[in-house]
Image: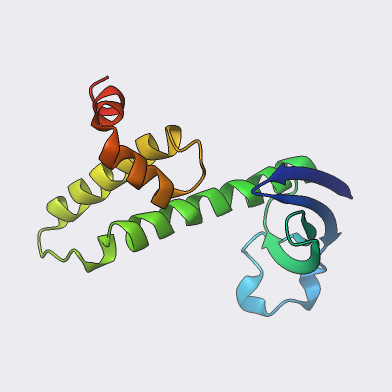
Amino acid sequence: MMTEIDKSHGRIDSRKYEIYPINTEMLDPRWCNSGICNMIKVTRESYNVKRDKRSTETRYYITNYNGKIDEIAGAIRGHWKIEIMNRIRDVNFGEDKLKSLDHGLQKSISSIMLFICSKLMEINSYNNLNILREELVHNTDKIHDVFAA
């Protein structure tokens, strides 16, 4: 078991990671060669300081990695960073609406979107793209500083 505490976005989050070995003999035969070996239970207790509100949520993950719990916790947290970036690319930039029969063009657009999002996240001190977007409208030098380097 491992516990992490984060303070950000006006919240105090406590995440408890528990790892349970999976009895592979009980799995459907189609999963026999998958390497599945552990289930991870993550319980997050959040306290919203501003609203004085508490919440708890539990999520479960299955993995074929049989490493240390801190490595698995890092992988889970890292996965959500990727999902957040995908959401930003789609919601803020409408990437999923861009259609082309040219596979090379699609890959190029995707790479450009990823580069732009990564650069914006580097300067996103507010952790809020809407605020950042408003700031960049009024401070175009900041855009130049980021993308000219």
